[in-house]
Image (cartoon, rainbow, N blue to C red):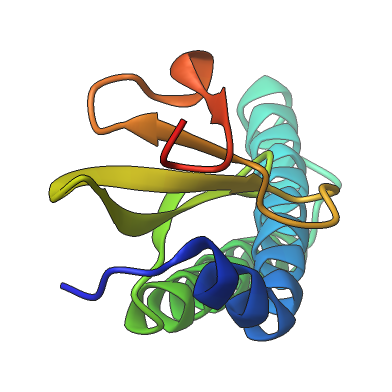
Length: 134
């Protein structure tokens, strides 16, 4: 497992930020495609008529495409050594060490840089401001 210093993690944001933006966008598109598919299925169950079979097939294909795209982007983020914590909000953690103990540098889409860290158990609610040595 790779451990980042705060400086390394902030430098990695140049690559991580666009991927997280894509992740959040694919998650939203996937959720919207699911709603569309469920609406079509509900209309079919309700009266069964007036909906071309191709329309439901297209909706199901869109759900699958977005799911694959989302999974691909998550894989790209994790290949960089970054942990994905929330795909809706774009929350990721960078593993780090504080006095030899593992901690996580925390970043959320919309923040300009990494300014917080937390223990492995602390999660987002336990975020503390950097630097790590305070």
